[in-house]
Length: 205
Length: 345
Image 1 (spheres, each protein chain N blue to C red):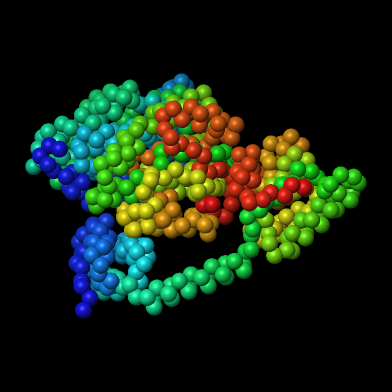
Image 2: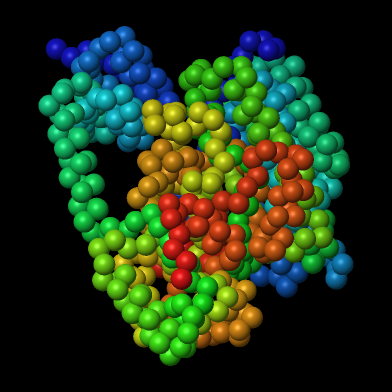
């Protein structure tokens, strides 16, 4: 028979403290009785934190919270977590890298070719299975999400896939392009430098 | 401690965690008629920190009231914290407090020296604020409660509302989060002396200094973070300003230990009330852990100022406030309105 800890009428955090004491005393299976849902939620957090499985029975606003260090249940929980993590990965596949675009064209040389190349570049990464975390536009680069219609479309596609498109607000302002922004968020030096700092690599075009 | 009474044992909830949940309050207030007056510049509508009433073209009066049951056992410190918390609303509006009135509920069976100490704590904070205690009201009540009704003044152009944030602003928070969780841990006697001191120092620090650091800087919006939590008060700022606020969860200052206690379930009831009201108002990045989310929604007692500052002024503000606290930092930014008012990154 499981030991029953009566925490009815006790205010937070007392039910948690009483359960913690039981765990610290080495009891691997016990029941805590409480009379409010907040205590139940806090007890669940404690159980999770201490490697216990937990189940709850409710009857007439009285809750019985069962704690057990049941290894089967624990491994079930872990398996579940792993699968859901994997699903998440398949869905997004966003890497921890950023692209910095400071020019309207790729490379130096013919302008028309350069604009077409940047459009192709954005299309290619939008179709790849490893997307950047963010694409950052500064200086002349802000002409891409404003004036290059086809490139802006690929950027929109990237944005819906979860890539952050950040465009320097001061630069838009300088070129008078604020109204022309077709995709992405207006950002600033502070945030853009932070993105660069946090990225494991930054590719500059 | 006088009489060896544990103040916190006389109350169910404590500090700003004792507030009526925002959802409940909202419904009641919406069912009541609204007052209209051309001189009332800031009233109920935007859930601001205090009301602002125009006296003439050069002066507005700012008024607020705040009181709560004890969150610490030392009556003098309780008095300090309650007063700092009440005064804060005036600072959050950009004003300076002038007069304060005591509000005290006190059990008739308790030693009168405890009453003295609570009031002495309040007096000292009002003095530090440069204001005066001008009277008050006391009633007998089994649960002690203390606070102030404060009036202050400002030039109309100095008023900082909570609903004028602009796209591109940076959000700065001046005190660390986790105060509600740490007070809950203190109630369970899990904190040592030095930790209790650290948390009480944070709560009793006046927001006066943070407000003074804004002097002559263009600041778009300001509020203080109290019972409604960082996310709750950010939500009020975002929706009042018709913007979306991004919270950089990994940059938010947090009291050492608060995340660990949150993980253990040492969480005040107020967090769940806040969450209930806020749950459909934010999106959460997958990297934000459960305990970090709990801290972001934890009710704060006498928390810091949350300022929406144009990017060009952020550096200056941070360099000024460095002298007063190690905790102030950029914790978010204001962007154009999106699907949700709050995006936690």
